[in-house]
Length: 427
Ligand code: F0G
Image 1 (cartoon, rainbow, N blue to C red):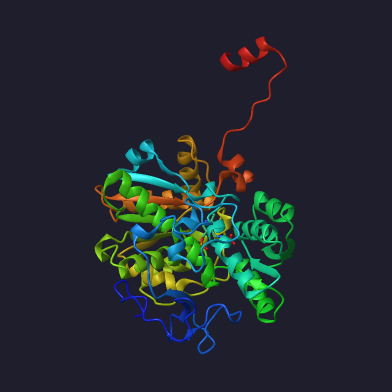
Image 2 (cartoon, helix red, strand yellow):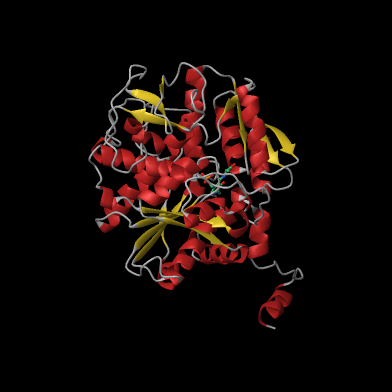
């Protein structure tokens, strides 16, 4: 129940540091935030959450109160974060695109695309990394690590490099899109390719972190989610500025379910602060690929826990995940906001990727899953025609050039001659 949408603002325990502490979402045990390296609860191994004695209201965002904090992007929300400024490139402040043709085709009152692919390394992971690397500095660690389907590794490498730290990434061999491996490589990460899927990589890197090899910056790390919750704040503020109301629904792709958890947490904090009514919280709607849909299965069957899928497959390699570790945070988020979860086929994902690209919005396959999911839910009547919806697109088109080539048209070879080119065009 401690993830209830209307839970009151918590009272600070003795271990709090400047009004910030860690709490277990399962047993409520609390911990000092920056004394020891810790990813899960010492008592019950449950997931941890960062808590604040004084959750902020919209009025406190970007107040300019801090001399060195920027007035844009993630750190504009410093009142809702554990620090005033982190290792920054900078990140956040991404566009909320209008897509009138998709809006019309889907048949909803309003549709906007929050394009997180416009972050410095091309995905929403940057928002989590700017906070996570700041915490790593506070803890005094020198090396960072993650398992990744690609984007986290690119962000870890870039922010770790910026913070002058060593970085180690574990990737599922042969299953990470080229752009992401290129980024991790050039930004200086040591890359280990594991003969197994993402979930196996995460098992190994968790063990490496437990043995003190490096500080773990997967979304299991609660501080990552603090940065990512600012996506929700930006959406609410931008949407309200345009429509005078908040969106009814936010549709997003789900892999490890960190982002779903992060958005829910941000909204709960606004409710705690009295800045948002429970009825105003957008319905969180998760989308997975049919070949990797354990969250959808759990939501459809009404289970509190997910069943780990050992064999996962999808063209949307970013969300090729069978054991979403943040499910205990994300499932309440979906349920308590009256949201849902839906699985889409790879062909539906590619069709949505083309649809977005035709309106100038270039996204990688996993990102297009959100729009594919919305289309499907609209067709089945789960989403009403009078809804105002924001779809999250999480990564840039260039992350996965191969998928883009496959979804797009082929280049046509022509001779080096104007007349021949004209013949080719009109002949
Ligand atoms: N979209 C993209 C482009 C992603 O890279 C990811 C996750 C997700 C959606 C799902 O987000 O895990 O918070 O539910 N990528 C991770 C990675 C797993 O390693 O880059 P989630």
